[in-house]
Length: 174
Image (cartoon, rainbow, N blue to C red; front, side, top):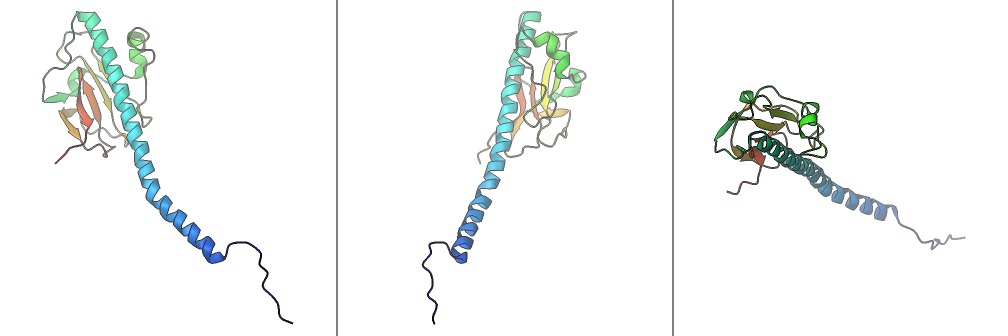
């Protein structure tokens, strides 16, 4: 007696292994790009928050002294000249609800912003600043030269001071 092979529909082991291998290759190509997109979104959220907070600070300053010192032309900024770093709770009573609906305490990487606002002397040359320490949470320095950095370097500090970005991510074309 000879056995006949049944003609049941199905996939062979080789066909299944090929499909799994193809899915693995596609996943290996997409996952790094997806992870980079998540970091880019966190960076963009941080920049947007800093612009909004900075605008609120300039509005506060404008109300305090009648004119803002925003956009001073400087080539470097030393955050130690701005006094001690504040946390969101320190600015809550000053900026909310007049200038902001809510003051974000954390940047895109869930790290605390550092706020600097000279309440006592709003006419000083260095009045307000804001820093995000980036993905790694390590502060690069207290002194920053005004310049951009590669936007894929998510560990760099982002700094806004007195109406302009001092350190910011921007594609640098050769």
